[in-house]
Length: 364
Image (cartoon, rainbow, N blue to C red; front, top):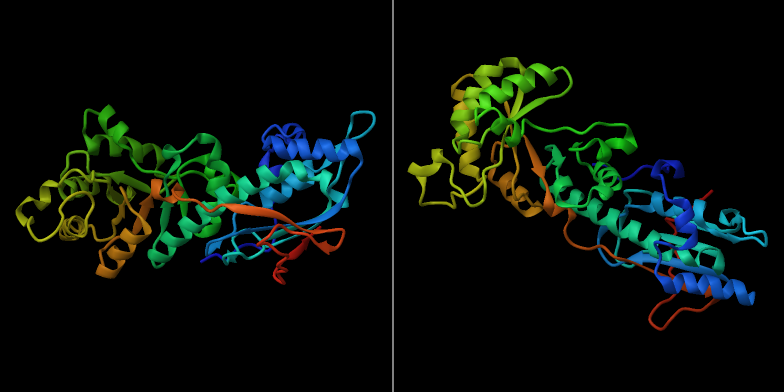
C-alpha cells in the first residue's frame, strides 16, 4: 500500500486559473477584504498560519495547495503588475498520501499576511476534497486485502473534480480509474468494461456486444464484460467466455440491489438474495469453473463500501477485483487554518495554539 511520494507535483500539472486565484475570485470575500485592507493601511504583520484536520486520514491535495501559494501568493505593485510573493514565504508541509492524525499540523505558512491571506479558502478546499478521496480509497484498499480496487465514481460527481480526485485515488492505492482525466496526472488511461449501453445497442445481446468490443480493444486493455443484462449472470458469463476465449480477462457483476439474479431463485431463504451477494458470486465462479474457464476473473460492483468489501473478504467470496463508486466521494474531511504566531509571538484564538510537527519538511 502506498504511503505517499517524497516528491511533489510541479505547479504546472494543476493548470490553475492563476489570474482568478490572485484576485480572490474563488475565495471567501472576507479574506479578499482582509488582504485589501492590510495593503491599503500598510499593516504587514509577519504571521505563521497552521493547517490541520480532525480525522485519522491520508493527506491529499497538499501539492495543489503548495502550487496555489507558489503561483498566486503576492500583491499588485504600484504599476498594477503582479509581484509574486512565494519567495517571501517559508512553507513547511507533509507529503501527498502521508497518513495523518487528528489535529496534526500538515502545513505551515509563514510570511507577511497580506501576501497569502486571500488563498485560505482555496488551499483548504483542495486539502479537504483530496483528503476525503484518499481516506475513502485507503479504507477500501485495506478492506480488499490486496485485491485490485477500480475507482468508478466519475458519474456521481461534477466532471471538473476528476483530475485531482483520480490522482488522490491513485496515490491511496486504487489500481484503475475510469476516465482519462482521472489518470492524467500520472500519464495513465481510463479503464472500463463492456457497458450496458453497448449491450442495449446490440439489442440486449451481451455476447454480440462483447465480441465487437473485444475485437476492437483487446490489444489495448483487459476485456471485462458486464454479465447482468439478462439477470442471469452465471449463464451469461459462460456464454461470453465461450465466445471470447482468450480475449476475455474477466466478467463484472453489477446486479441492482433491488433485484434477485435468476440463478438464486431456488436457493432463497437463508440469505439476502438481492444485488451482488456472496452466493451470486459463488454461482458465477462455479459456472465458469465447470465450463473450463477457471482463469476468467470476477469483478463486482454496485453499492460496495469498505464494510461490504470487508464482509466479502472475511467470508472468502471468490472475487478478483472490486469496482467502487459513489461511496468513495461521500463524507467530509474538512481542514482549518489558524494564525497562531504574529511577529514571532504566540497569538491564536482561544482554544488554539501553535502545534509544531517534526514531520513537516521545508518546501523550496
